Image (cartoon, rainbow, N blue to C red):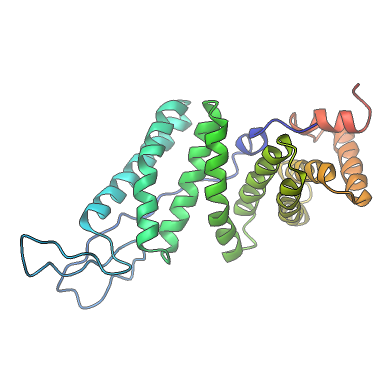
Length: 263
């Protein structure tokens, strides 16, 4: 009774992805670091021209800066390809850009712009991977992205789009665990997704995206929890959404089976 992986998250169109400002190499004579968090101060040139000093902690090499700026350009191009339906072309650019973005985050782990960019890039990459039937790769992208998205949501709990993206990814990871019969691993993922989606429904109770996201999380949780209240809530919500016609094509088959409306 598990749902098709990826469909719920990938069809909602909940997030508008944005790119950060280009990284810049600070001039050696500058008295202070740029106020722009996307700009990275660089070490002074080595006194010996034949040798390049290792970058200090929190600084990026000129090569890393160049690679990061190319990644920003490639990400923008990949978005355009993805929007035009060329998921294979987009995926190639996303996967080519990710190593430079990861390197920037590793060099400056406190830079929120870089971490948010990596979170966005992983989310977009997972969408392209799923669209090209590379589901295991998409799951790996989710697993890497979820900790970053947790930080994004924690920084701004009232932002519904980010909260829904995180909840959607958690549902997909829960589905993967449940498909592998790992109920113990799936249950906390569904529980976290349920709590996030419930907040979205409370904030906008008539929004069908919010309701279907909550229902997806509850369907999963009802299969991994022994709490009768969870099953009761799932069935009641599913029946109501079936009756009013707000249930989506992903959740409908599960609710039909759970309520006995489909043999």
